[in-house]
Amino acid sequence: MTSILVIEDNEDLAFGLRTALENEGYSVAIAGDGSAGLEQAVRGEADLIILDLMLPKLDGYRVLRSLRGSGVDAPVLVLTARGEEANKVQAFSIGGDDYVTKPFGILELMARVRALLRRTRGRDDAPMPAVERFGEIEVNPASRTVYRAGQLVSLAPREFDLLLALLKRQGAAVSRTDLLKEVWQYQTGVVSRTVDIHIAELRRKLEPDQAEPRHIRTVWKVGYRLER
Image (cartoon, rainbow, N blue to C red; front, side, top):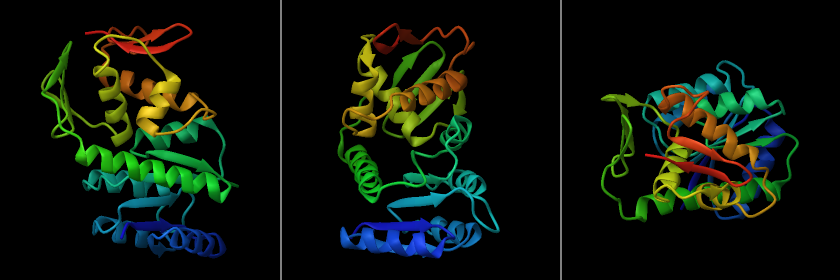
């Protein structure tokens, strides 16, 4: 049975999430603060983690950094009451896979949970291509590692999947909508700014000059392409 860990200090919300998730057939564990949530998560029993950012003892940002630093690669769905883009960018940059802004509808949250789980399972089952190279970047899909000039680069799981989606186009342009469908497994109607945020992070980590990118290029009125 798929296991989900909910790290949320609001007892009513945590109870509601547990009830909804269990009704969908998931096994659910609850942690009421950041320290307890981190302790449970590092045991590696959860297939997916739902993480509130504003937590007692240890806030969600520190929990997320510690999870990724400990090698926990389970997808993380961030819950935040803050709608500002900077908070979303920060959550993505330290390893978050998706976010839902409070208040949210339970149907939306369930759709995002299913999409994250499908992406993870698809990643595990798919055949792995050979090592890819562009510029001073080396990408190994089998080990999900990226090196820049011989130095390991830490990418969030979603950033890595986005990079692979660009690589497999062999220089062809791909639209934001197609990237959302492939990487996030969303249908139309999702705000395309999600793609732009992740592209900005890839450029920051991989480009010599992110203001003048050599490899991850914007295609006006279309989307993006990767130029070797």
